[in-house]
Length: 84
Image (cartoon, rainbow, N blue to C red; front, side, top):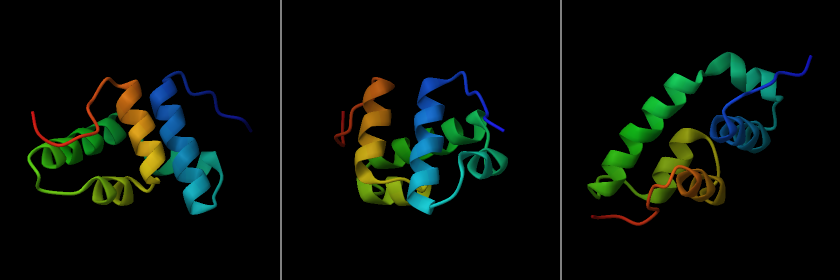
């Protein structure tokens, strides 16, 4: 079964995580929701902006690679550099 995801940023995240973990998209969708993804992303992003964690740490905890995280932040209009 193919799952249709309406949120393009969440879709990108799900596809990137599935690729990184070597699993199917549906498996990633069983493990997370868009709300949970955005909540985790923004918590990590706040810590990153406050220099409490690295970019690599963010990517690792989201289960995606550095380049996918950079793309997601860019699509959301968020800076991929620390500080204000």
